[in-house]
Figure: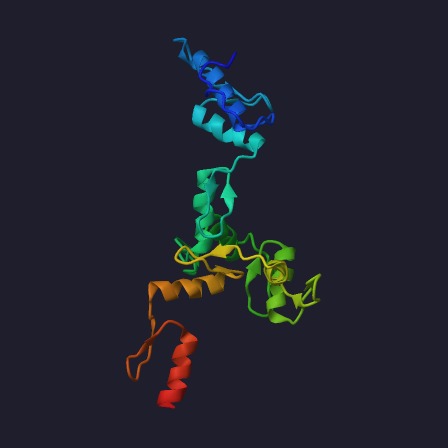
Length: 235
């Protein structure tokens, strides 16, 4: 017999042990205990025995075990377990930097990045770069920073051997070999390997001619087109 509050049986419903149907049944089974008139005891996870007070938090916690990721980024299609994680991720695709350092005015997308940066202005950052004076909390961060001032490129591409200063740059470069294009335009079917190219393409749809010639007031979508115009027309 189906559990109280469970959805009607459906032909073809997937039956893995950790399915969404099982999650629904667990939540429904927990509801009567909270409606007895006594103190609400909360909800216990059958997988890890963790007690959770609120139903919404219990449902969110269950996604850890089911692998469900219902929140999807419309730009790169990456999926998330929690809505809060999706909202945080969206900043990656925007130019907004709402978190400002009070000491130097530098702006950051995430509060965690601002917190890390703030240590540069405090005694918590004892390791200083001899070239530019920037300070770091850990020697590993200083060593990583020093590559800006040198030609060291310790990260090779396993496919073509090209070398990079940063591990993130290697991962981005490897999309050329894999054909991965994670950034999709919502105005047309075109997709892009690099986020910077994706942003350039979006400006074409938005028709933002933000680069204006000071001599004739003609405007261009890209700075490179403005520079070509200035060389050709105004010499």
